[in-house]
Length: 404
Image (cartoon, rainbow, N blue to C red; front, side, top):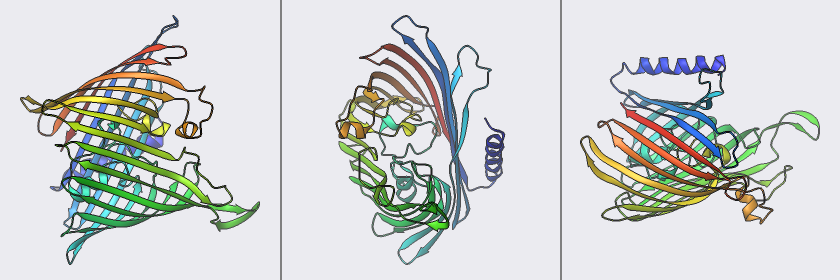
């Protein structure tokens, strides 16, 4: 881990400790540790790692009209079984750092924000939870131990401004944001987004649509101060029909950097698509979900249950088992997934010979330790590269979360 990342991590934790002295401080910490073992069926040597992940989030209500928020994540995925004291690649990331001013006017509350990082990204539950106080609606399959509010559909991190108005007489919030971010080609881009959200007993919606343009300092092989000659579209939707207590349908979909005009070309090949489609059935004795998804390779690496960017599966779970300190949840995920190809390859019927097919069965248990803390155990068995050089994969993860 680089020294500057360590110093940054220490500085944020120090700031969090300072803020915790104020009466209006709140936050959460979470993390996971476990073991992962891959056993090839052709007799080759087994390989194992000890993956680790953690996050810390804090909010300080400085006054009744000013809020400061921060969240950081840290993870390492290659601590070897045979030498856990050796150097390894570790990562520290700023998920969010924001300062919000909130002011009432007539029958609405206005929020003016300055932010760094991924600010209330579409696909996560951050915007809905903050503005409507709703329970998380994301799929159980997208649980992450590097973020408090789940994994976003689009990888949009940067710096900018946001304005949101939340109406008192209707469960509606709408707003606009202007920010700079790195696009999928790692170039700086300028973006303007609009947002609309609502939350009722049976419909929850968060919708974002925006335009962007990469910033360039050369034009026709000539140095210039700044030129904008490419327009891209991006956006997404997070929609739930139903609720936690009823049958439901969750639809999450996103587009990332679709070029519509410019010298970089235009068109659409399918690789810009992210989606999750999940019907949910709620019965007296258990709940059942069917899920189909396509995420980016980068985002799926931070999920607790999913290993590959494209897949489908089903989940059985029961989340109202009475325990001494609250309801216990027991469940099992079964997923068939693919890596080595993209959704664009499938949409365009390209050569799929590079596809690697995997299957996973994952029993899990979520156990409350108190009203503010919980622990989760995850055991996963996978059959990897089913049609090629198959191997068995075994993993065990212990995760915990505490809200304060």
